[in-house]
Length: 268
Image 1 (cartoon, rainbow, N blue to C red):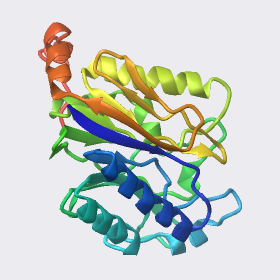
Image 2 (image 1 turned 90 degrees about the horizontal axis):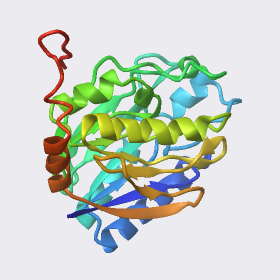
Image 3 (image 1 turned 60 degrees about the vertical axis):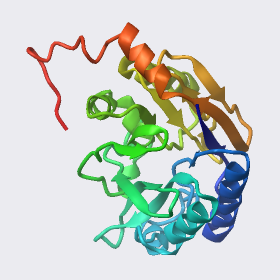
């Protein structure tokens, strides 16, 4: 069994305040025996509707900037793996990437992924501030197993989690900032459970709470059982996960094997 820490918090508009909280959460997670600490989308800071795309881009950083480097140092100090997010600078002066990164317990950047599905739906238009990524990142081996990363709205597109699963992912981590609204929490719960069941994998989905976001950070096991639901509380939740559970589930419910790849196929 391997312990995972899931952080649910309300990011302020101040990057420095959020970073201080993030570093404290990493310390706390490590002190309580977690091997991985996973954070929600937009943890760097909350961007209001009044903030201009150019102002957001000016506050964004590169993947090797001060924000990520501080988190990497905390990961190394605590010998813990960290999955976090940032607004990453792009070549455009009025657009940024929504990027998730994985830091190893030695403080090295193991993987990054830029969100490809922008939330241009249900009255929102992320493309006014964000630049979409152009590729799905391959799964990364960690002490928990192989991790595939996606972000929030990506969960609504089953092709992406499936590609990650057939490429070896045993755990899907989806940092999110799921916007409140009619039926939105029902969608959130249903989608996370479905992605776990159909791919026989764990789904770890840290979510923002407060501001315009619904919370309900989740961990779902490969058979669809909710192991953690953080409701509306800020803080850290802990879950123990096991690769044996993945193997057992995929053996008794071999959905990946039973696909008719002679008729249809997906490749990453």
